[in-house]
Amino acid sequence: MADRVLVVDDDELICDLVSETLNFEGFEVETAFSGEQALRMLGTLHPDLVLLDIMMSGIDGFEVCRQVLNNPATRHIPIIFLTAKGQFEDELRGYEEGAFDYITKPFHPLTLAPTIRETLEAYNHQDLEEKRQRRIEKLRGLLSPHSTADAGRHL
View 1 (cartoon, rainbow, N blue to C red):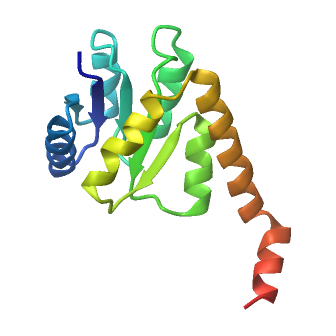
View 2 (cartoon, rainbow, N blue to C red):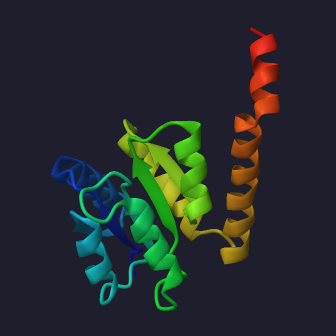
């Protein structure tokens, strides 16, 4: 049985591109065009992974992520953010909110399937959590005042 991915983005073109790419790679794909629609679908869909935009009207991706992870019925579903928010602070917040990976737009469509497979094939949820925590530490280190001062001296 194919892994099921819920793609959540208010841009229909992005949803179409991601859906076509992942279908070609053997995934079963469902799409939602808002955070509200995604939360409704999660009640019955039971995807293996959610690919989630952050900047959407209504409920944004951060809030969707919080609600998914706070619901005992969905908290096991890994979330990958797929977003135009590409600053270090945005990526750090994404990991802190509970995402297991963070892909910035523009992206190459062929990079999606390997990233999704890596997440789904992780030995267990603890491995994903350890990887997420390492990324949080790395990003915090890059954003710390000490790192910024050091980076300025090397220019």
